Length: 366
Image 1 (cartoon, one colour):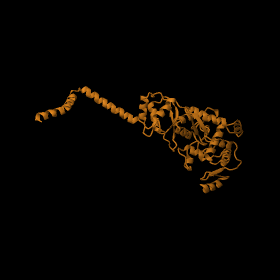
Image 2 (tube, one colour):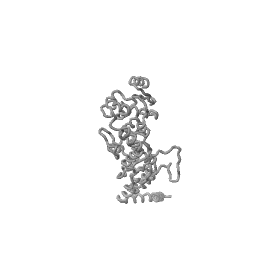
Image 3 (cartoon, helix red, strand yellow):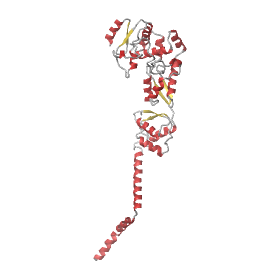
Image 4 (tube, helix red, strand yellow):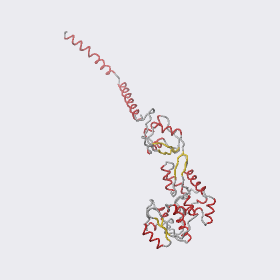
């Protein structure tokens, strides 16, 4: 074959490449920009799909069972909260993994501004769609909480806050002047008018209960438990309901075992009758930010009307919310002549008639 023939064959083979080169050379800059934008858009879409796709372990058609019980999480969504605030609350509680993802999904799917207030029960690391389903339906359910005997207002606020039923500071502020019954009227130097009158019990409430409704419920339970017979008994003893509750709160916080309640109540009543300071550590503990195993001599010098070492008579008001057993112990005290008691390290009380006997007990058990 001639050289010219070989050249013609080479040209024929390279012609498609030359034509493709010329075609791209003729493309307008606008077309190139459009193609580039399109590619970037596709990359963005693929990225979003990868971000918002559920993990491979989760599927609408496959149920994964675990022997580990799922941890329930209570979250309160208040009226007027934005989607961003809701997302942050859910992420903080561990219900969702990403607040940013939640906000974007809410906007894309039309849920923004349509989620209903209430207190919801979730579990940790939920599917976003399941979370939206609850929030859009305005799920209502009962939340159960238990207030033990001897809890103070601060401890009640903390427990309700842990369940996301209340804002702690809002609850404390409301408790300061909460007095729906005449006998609860706030006295001078009292921290919380509600202290002592929020009956310790197990309660079931709907998720949308307000702080005022919770306080009314607990104070109403106290009022209903205080029978006409008990009120009459207190009056015959010369005790107002307020003083009865204050005394019962001291007994509640001083006593660990049932057999000691009526005896400690008698010691307090006898000291009051003698105008002798009660000298109860429980009232000092009420003044402290954190409870101590033992109060110190310095603690007994705290300048406060709650300091029953420095002041005779009852403190300004209750120091805790007593249960029925403590109230009945005050109404029906033991028949003793004891004036002193000291608790050993196990919480059992030991009693004395004289101060010298008391000092011996202190040396023996403390």
